[in-house]
Amino acid sequence: MADSSPPAGDPADGATRRDFLLYAAAGLGAVGAATAVWPFIHSMNPAADTLALASTEVDISPVQEGQAITVTWRGKPVFIRHRTAGEIDAANKVDVKELRDPQTDAQRVKKPEWLIMVGVCTHLGCIPLGQKPSDPKGEFGGWFCPCHGSQYDTSGRIRKGPAPLNLLVPQYTFLTDTSVRIG
Amino acid sequence: MSDQTKFDNKIVQWVDDRLPIFSILKHSAVEYPTPKNLNYWWNFGSLAGMMLVIMILTGIFLAMNYAANTAIAFTSVERIMRDVNWGWLLRYLHANGASFFFITVYIHIFRGLYYGSYKAPRELLWWLGLAIYLTMMATAFMGYVLPWGQMSFWGATVITNLFSAIPVVGDYIVTWLWGGFSVDNPTLNRFFALHYLLPFVIIALVGLHLMALHTVKSNNPLGIDVKGPQDTIPFHPYYTVKDLVGVGFFLILFLGVVFYAPNFFGEPDNYIPANPMVTPPHIVPEWYFLPFYAILRSIPDKLGGVCCMFGAIIILFFLPWIDSSKVRSAKFRPIFKQVFWIFLADCFLLGYVGAHPPEGNLVLLGQLGTAAYFAFFPLLWIIGKLEKPRPLPQSIAQPVLKPMEKH
Image (cartoon, rainbow over all chains, first blue to last red; front, top):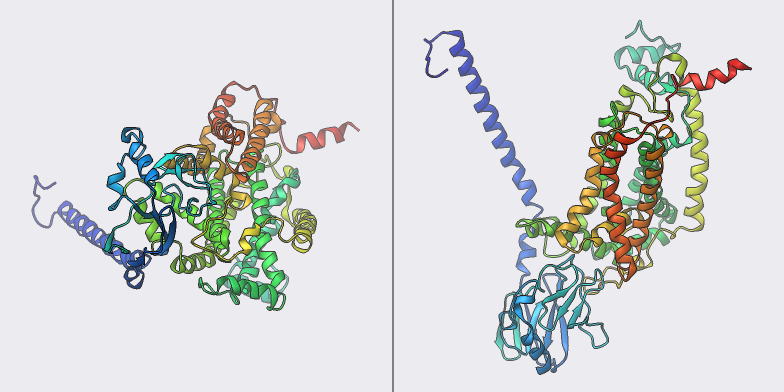
């Protein structure tokens, strides 16, 4: 149509102009409507006060070797385990290439004796057992998720069961030797 | 309008001339020509409608005493049980009503499956039914979260985490669903809002379902088309009365459970307040989700399991085109009839597997059940091609009237 460029006043020309105006208006209207939807969708994302509660400080001095504590961070449990030399050894001996989510133990800790990670199974969000001495720890001496049978080793890496990833290591910093800030 | 329908009552006529509600009612609930051979399996549509009304009524009155805040949600439900006048009745009607609503809907769906009610020209009727079913599932899931017990909390956690299986955007979607970094107060609030909203969406869908039904008319146990007025009877009084008989029997069962075994369908763990730090040793969804839960757990891959679980429902939308047989009713389809019962048994098997921890032989059983579930659909296509259906009667009236003429 554009090539033939009919003279002004030609009915065909009028029709294309009208079409253009119609599509442009409808297109702009659609963009406007889509933009108006965003505040509604975004209102469901975490609010400012929820985001503000994003870090936790923990005193780890009472945790003896071989013990573990669970603290709350962003409404989720965080496992802090004071690992024994045997557990660290076991985690280092694993052939990384055999792992579903390959990570060396060194990549998962800042100090080898302190393993800190989010205690939420990467499958469907249950809390794995293994923090208490009486808990089942699975075949790999780490954690066992009772919901669907995922098993984690002494480095919190997924070894067996449906979970796809290792237990998440959150951002954390040692403020002192006995105090750590998570988040 | 005014010269088509005449009502004896002048006021009714006056209203109807301006707003034809009485004509519409008369047309679609009184005179509506219904196949004369419907059996009692056709009662479950109206029973489901009754359950929807009961659920909305009890739900509105429960909402007057419920508080959607994690600090007091659990105690507000206990207050309804102990202190609110007749609160225990409202809550037990509502909690067990969900189960009985699903019982009616499952029977309704399997009736449609057996008698081929999903086939042309009833494809959209079938789709709207499935849309109602999906909306019911979402509503039931969010309603179960509201009492804020252990099963509420962990059920919500597991189900919302299903969306984390989606590649790339999964985690953002889950955070968005939660409104935080775990299931918490924002989650409870929005679930309550949506739990209150969705039943009205269901009402709208039921309206469309009925519009489609009254356009294509009811299927019947023979699965053949209505040939003329000799094949039908008016809906009222014949089927209104028959539906009421069904309502009587159904209410005996429903109220029997409400009064004598009100926690039969419930989980004891849900009488423990939600604790985000402790997962119960054995998480189970409500019974009506068990077959899908079994399918989810049978696939040893997170994304694969989630896809199969949703796929198990999505595939039902394609039934009208998967089933290659032109004959609707299983009455005349000897092979399909057997496969239907095997499919139904398989759904019960998956339900059994879903209710138990995934250990030992149950894992294998669940995987076989899942395979059988999905095998049903290609099999349906093949059977339609191979099966030789039994001869169909010429009309609905024929098998009824012929023997009578001989006498």
